[in-house]
Image (cartoon, rainbow, N blue to C red; front, side):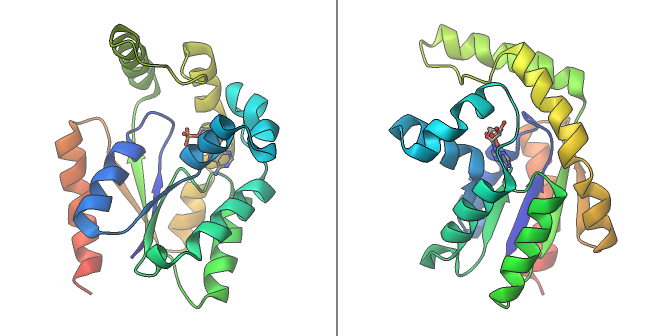
Length: 197
Ligand code: AMP
């Protein structure tokens, strides 16, 4: 199964993806995690994207194309994978369609996690306070100002994917404002439809 999780920063895509990895045995491809790993290692790519990520902008479609196409060729992606925050512009969506077609594969479903932006800001503040209290490092882009910037970037550059995938008949939406368990249940109901095919 090839699945895209769509939703603004902080909507819970990563949390849900981690769970799907366990239950459906397919890997999670988070371009955010991949890029943070490059940053941490101080690779040329990491150095190139650092400032862009820290201010909450998107890295270029070209960079995403490189890291995603390389990753989905790996053997663990044979049975499918979850693209978690890995498709953020219409250009990237077209690229994924093209790459999959070349491999004679197809995207199954896009699940949009619908959330309220102000509520996400509240959740972010709570999460940052808890992380700091636990003495753990906070992500460089997890401060209110950059978080709001990332929300604006989502609205402007990523939200156009909603009509794009709706047109393809691939879009399903779930209410992301409930508990993690409630969101998981709604997502599972959709995934079960595909597993049953
Ligand atoms: P995330 O952890 O998914 O919120 O991603 C953190 C940051 O990495 C984003 O704010 C972007 O700067 C960058 N990034 C991650 N995925 C993408 C993508 N598909 N396209 C462009 N930039 C991305």
